[in-house]
Length: 195
Image 1 (cartoon, rainbow, N blue to C red):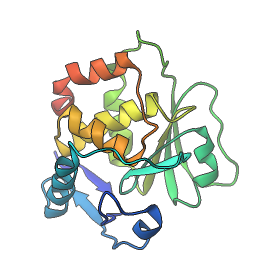
Image 2: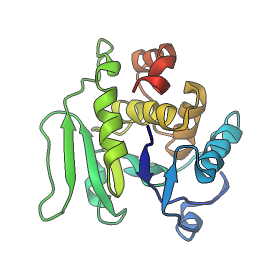
Image 3: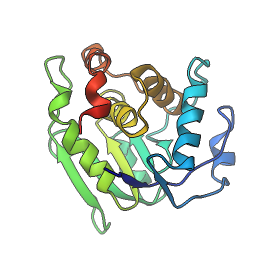
């Protein structure tokens, strides 16, 4: 089954600032198994083991081209990041007015008893079917949203938990899922073949 995800591929070293990254080249699509897919996957694998560089806290960060992770303050970056699809992981959704967005809200608790595997198929389907940039957010952008973005990277790029987790922390150092979620991700090697 082919999964298409419209992405903007930013070519930058891990030490490059976000300002320099804005001027990077753009590509149309990354298709699982394509040369661009392997290039990004190899970059992720090579970054594993490198020291996480400090960044200033941001309400939204681009994890891979076209996939953003943020807090509820990311509302103010929707237009700037050209986001067309929003996945909200909290209760009481708020949808900004006059923005043409595809909005999905899932009630996911940030408690250890929450079983994240119950939501994976729905989250993966939403991101894979998105036309344009996707924002995944929870109130603080640290735990729930980071957990699902890590799981998605494991699924999409067929990479182990440690590499996906490290990559997300490189892009968003404030990302820190609760221990129960980290344990579930580590225990679920079948996430990559879940669908």
